[in-house]
Image 1 (cartoon, rainbow, N blue to C red):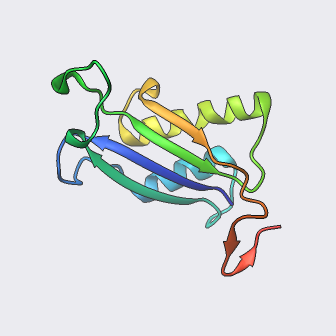
Image 2: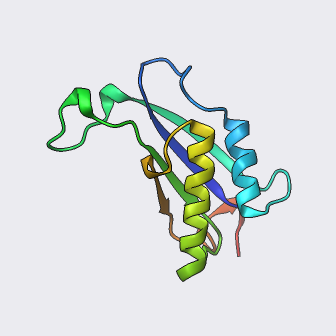
Image 3: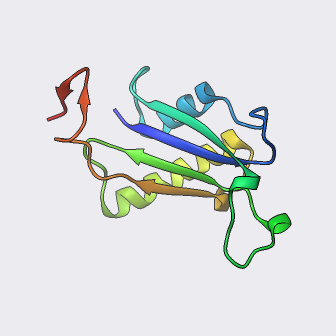
Length: 122
């Protein structure tokens, strides 16, 4: 059951420019081939005024999307590379962004350290 955190740098202090969390969950469910209710998405926004890149003027700062994927047992090697591209592509479509603006990070494996309803994921 992947847990996916999506942080969208958006253009204003309102959340109207954020994508739909259900649309993201459905798109990512397709990427992971997951049954309904098995991909959890946590969506957050970060106003562009609160994001910066070194050496870039404030008005030229891009508005990227940061994605963190937590699997019990994440894929490795070529399978991870393929999945990362599929995740970035799905999130880019859902957010109306170019795929090169979506950055995917894999969290450490959740197995043995995440407890759902108090039950440790073995």
